Length: 280
Image (cartoon, rainbow, N blue to C red; front, side, top):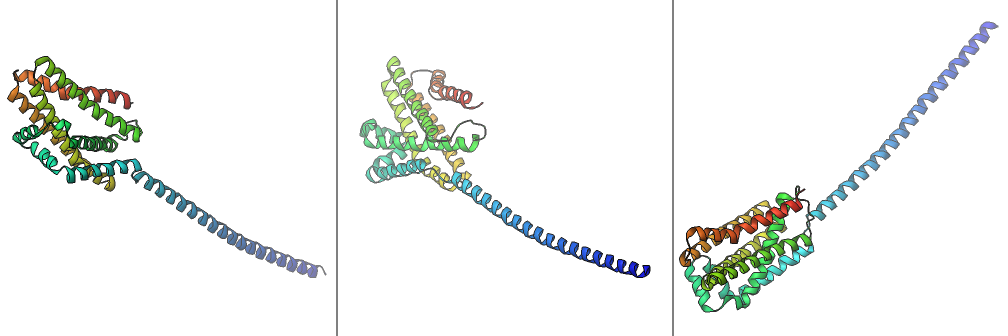
């Protein structure tokens, strides 16, 4: 009797253990299925978050690479002025280019009429005020955007344009002042005219180059623009030295000091002020 009861109890216990183990295995499988489903859901959510973040970063990248509208308007305005200059005042344009190579062409340019009262002079000046500040704007952004604490915006471009205009006004006032003191009006007028000629040609040459850089973001164009600007300034200095040595009644030392005061000292002062103001 006891043996039978013991066997029955053993069979019951074995059945219970089997059922428990089966339920545990089944529950574990179902848990795994739920975990897999949950993991798959997490994967879907994670993939969605990653794709959303990627699209957002791509959108931000594209928005930073897109050219602002005000720059497009400036470049378009510069090319419109250049087209007007080419079709309506081509003779003045060609004569201005020739004047950078030959002094005789510059004298011919002077003899034709007063170039400061001609309409092409205003167009040349507007092109210069557009292209040169854009060159400095993107040059600073390319080389010093990480160290220069400044927001690249229309106000920053406007400040650069004011500095460019201020440099020319300083030169004009300095030349007129020295001409009044030393009674060298003819020499001073020739010197100022040569400065204008080289500035105008530099502005015309740099406008398409800086436009290529803006819309392609290829560094070769910004380097080319800065190289052309440097060559133009060097040729302008040589022309100023030639005009001074041809007509000057002073020694070469005084002429050198005059050119340093006219060209280099203002640049050093402005660079020092901007460095102290923007670099922290």
